Image 1 (cartoon, rainbow, N blue to C red):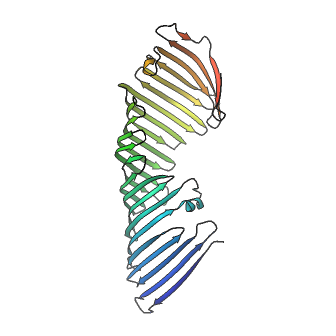
Image 2: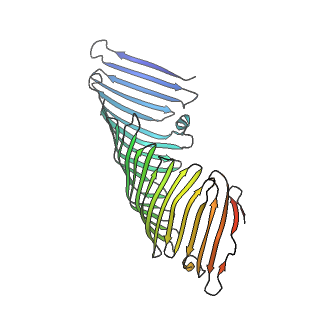
Image 3: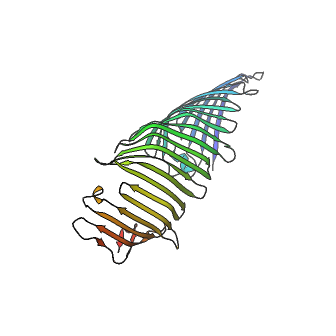
Length: 364
């Protein structure tokens, strides 16, 4: 059974404006939700009310609020202080059992019947990843506006993201138009760096597009430095589609790529994949779906850029399978390796095989 017990004590004058001082103890009992206790003190009258609440058990914190003219023209202010709260049990109650979330900090606000303004300053831990969040949010006329909401990750990620934009039509079909910008974000373990970045999300939940622009520089090995500029568009209108155009440099060689993918689970359609780095290229098109193959073509005019081997390589083939099945069949239709000191190594017939990523088996 789900029930709420409450005890109210205090005094109220029975003449206008009904000056009151009340104490309220509430206790939420539920097999479906965490236990929650709220101890409140209320003082004031119909012109002005002030209240202080202490929360314990399922949530730990204090909330102080002041209400002006609550009958005719309500205006309110609140301040709240939250200790370390693990709200994972609450999320589990609502079906979000894969998310581990805790927070602490302050949340202050003010508003009236038509307007809400909130100023959070909290530290949030999501699946062991911590971030400090501060800024300003406004709600008016069914629109939530993010006014320079700053997110500063802790731990392995160093940098500050700034969220700006709005989410409208909240009561019907929310429309999102939000951008995240950053000057520099560094992933500390390998010094992977993103600079001058902007991630824009636009559309409704069922028809959402994501645009990404940034400069990416990574130090993955001592001699691996990669700089990439470009944009990507992700849409959910037809399940998931990705369109990306990238350009940059690696080891003083030009890098560019064009990608057009569609995912209609469990089928993957590659409308275009063209990736080039200096003398090397990878081309692919086709589909991982019944009756179709994903065709690929790999070439390198100078293998010394990739390994200790000198020479040229050209190969092409196909892959057959589906994303919801562990087994993929492949075919190498052409293979031609030219070495400076040897005759060319070529295939005089195609090579067929399969691999199973669940069983870690590979057959040729």
